[in-house]
Length: 238
Image (cartoon, rainbow, N blue to C red; front, side, top):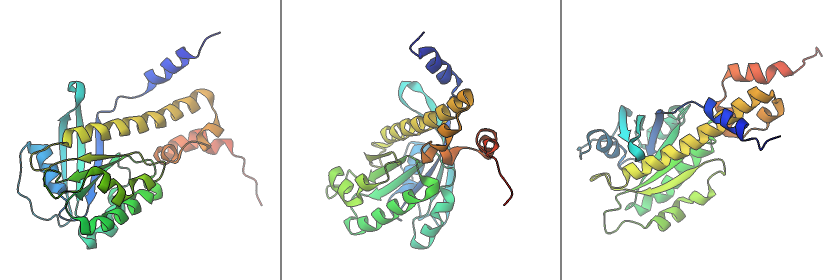
């Protein structure tokens, strides 16, 4: 007899504590990616130049409840010639931070195309996306509802968690709040993955693994598949 509470507690106690995350920063050139990166690192405005390839920084951020989290940021250039390389940087990332210029209405369609293209990739299914609406301090900036409509964020895959965050990279407004939201989305995704893993271990339920969401399957290691799934198959010679 019981309500299953002990099983749930056992599962949750088996989950690891996540304190380090890999984040890829994408977006069109001049959206403010590098400005955001160094605002987070130095807590002040830093003049930057267009990124020719990518910048990497490891930054510790104090989130709510005085929780310190380490983000490994990779800031990738947004020039047209670099966009085909974006997918190589998103492999095995924990989250995507996609910046848009809230003032540049003419390029919003291009930003939409690239946002949907990168989130549709099979390897990015389930990867949380924080869409950062930068330059919200300017009078001629688009409203959040306007940006959401132009980017068609509601049409993103149902397996892609997303959040639209207003920010001003120069003074840092909205950045911490955005990272907290991204952190929450990543943790929820990782909890789902680890719960599936632990449940399948406890129940030895192959069907549970095979019917897992794409994000779970994407994150599972070869060792996991060999131990839990492949050994259950019986192969016969043709």
